[in-house]
Image (cartoon, rainbow, N blue to C red; front, side):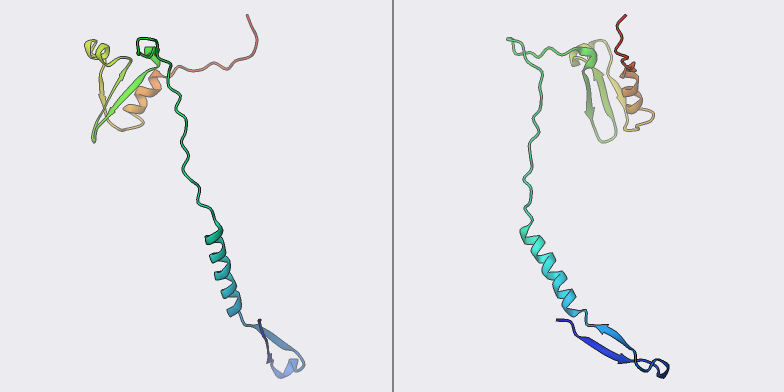
Length: 125
């Protein structure tokens, strides 16, 4: 328990004393609380996010609209980007080699492929 240690002041305030509280037990209490929270905290297990894949047709090939399919092959210094099927992009010479610069290279390519969305007003024409 903390003890109160009275200390005399100057002669002008002869009847008053300052109070000094021993803080050692407070430090012990702090460490006890830290230990309690460490031992009672449950560490969460990693969760697996469900990946939604496109449904495959009976032939085993997934039907994906080619304009929405963007593939990036990453290397240390460069990126090869193409739209749609690799064989078609290779035959039509649509493979783009770029670097990791977000403003001028890869980011510019992605922004060009994004179509501006018009806000829906809810009105029908």
